[in-house]
Length: 253
Image (cartoon, rainbow, N blue to C red; front, side):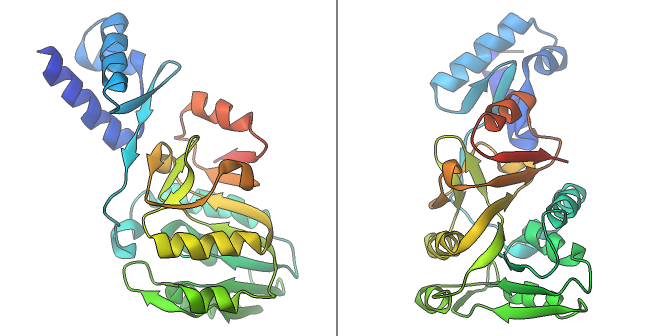
């Protein structure tokens, strides 16, 4: 196999998995670990991936925004596990905010009944789902409705957040980067999400492992502004150790 062909296949493997290990690539392509390290270093110099200890992780800038329907069935089991862990952070009587997204929808579905929760959301589909949970008071933050994500955003949404505060906010993300923080494709959605975090005592990001190393257009917050990240066990161990050294709680489930 030619070097360029192997490197193209390495990038394809990386896009599918998010993180690749040198040892696994060595076995996959039947070449030495040194050859793979040279490939990864070359691709990193070209800006096509991020080198980490023992392998590489995806470096991807999101230009297109997938719809909620496109995301809803991706990594569904991982999202359910993330949601179950998120429920453990919720105490009876809390006022919580649940942002739009396919992972946060799993949190909505996992909420237990009769906890006396006041649940705020800016997601139209989440609001409808919340009405089926006994003992939950549902508050909808209105605004401009984005059909691609069912999120209500903009000046009206920000105005509705005035003088309202939450014990804890759960937001999804399209990208999580050590350098660029938490991002989503829509600038308007990112602005509303940042305002939500400013009104929250505790700030939690729910995202499966494929979102790490990805950067989208709209920045919600730096990682220093986040209290908790909940992801799945597919997160690269070296990256998990790096994140654990930051001033935040990291849960992999």
